Image 1 (cartoon, one colour):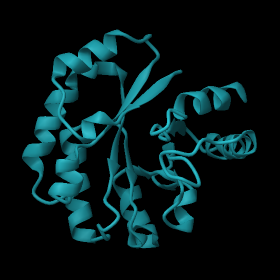
Image 2 (cartoon, one colour):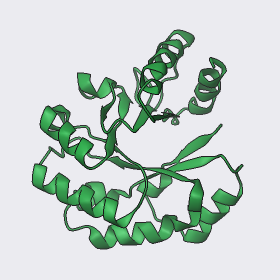
Image 3 (cartoon, rainbow, N blue to C red):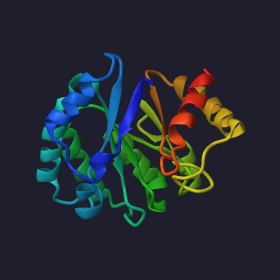
Image 4 (cartoon, rainbow, N blue to C red):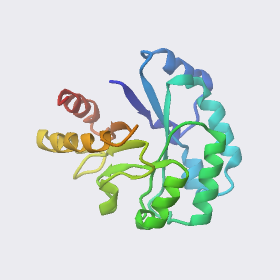
Amino acid sequence: FDCTEINSSFYRPHRPATYARWAASVPAHFRFSVKLPNTITHGARLIDCGDLLARFAEEIIGLGEKRGPILVQLPPGLDFDTKIAAAFFKRLTNTISGQIVCEPRHLSWFGPEADALLVEHRVARVVADPAPAPAAAMPGGWRGLAYFRLHGSPRTYWSSYDATALTDWRTRIPETESWPETESWVVFDNTASGAATADALAFQALG
């Protein structure tokens, strides 16, 4: 594999030395995306979280050049508020450099106003499966990054993907690769039954 998503950072903090050890264990080309802690997205709900962001930035510094995108997964009940979202993404980009990808799950985040705000702050919107809204099945926001999170379908986190489904997802990648200077990530998050690794290997074998 060329990358992996650190999901445990959502639940608990890790020491910089832990991140550094992970970075040292992989080849030079390998990258880690890192999920923002739930204390920020679900606890603070993006409000007044400057200290939490600063603490997280200090933790992940151990990844060095092997750090990829920061993943911001929002709770299903968090609706889009222009003022709150703009202030949060401004603070986030001022605190942590590099790519940002957002996985909203409330319907209000899939309209033109939210999409324009994500573009303004250079935040890509996750392509999710299962999709919480029709637009979530397609890339949105900033087009410098396409980030696919495949959670398993029909049973989220548990179901594996058969050959037909994997081929269907593989055919969607060239569309994003045709965008100028776009990087594509595909992450299998159907880990509850251990299907993610096998699905990722089968997907990779499709070329």
